[in-house]
Length: 92
Image (tube, rainbow, N blue to C red):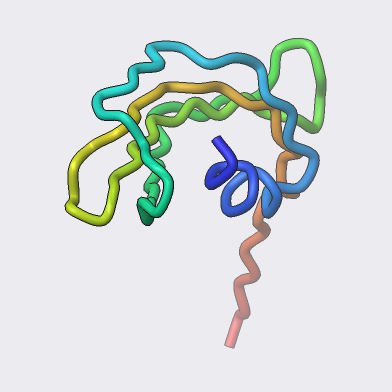
């Protein structure tokens, strides 16, 4: 969890954890293990109750130094939405 908080959630402005689903520990993590994590966005939508925010669901995998999967989870978080991109068309 610390990997996700330090690397993913701390860089997401206005993020609030909404819950964790399907948490599974596949292998024990031992002192001295080196862990790496990756996350994949599986869904993103505007918040129904909070304008200016969105709900992002992601799937995360943590592996040890031998490439063994030690943790998988799916989670949701509330994030601040970026302003809509505007396109500028020049007539020349």
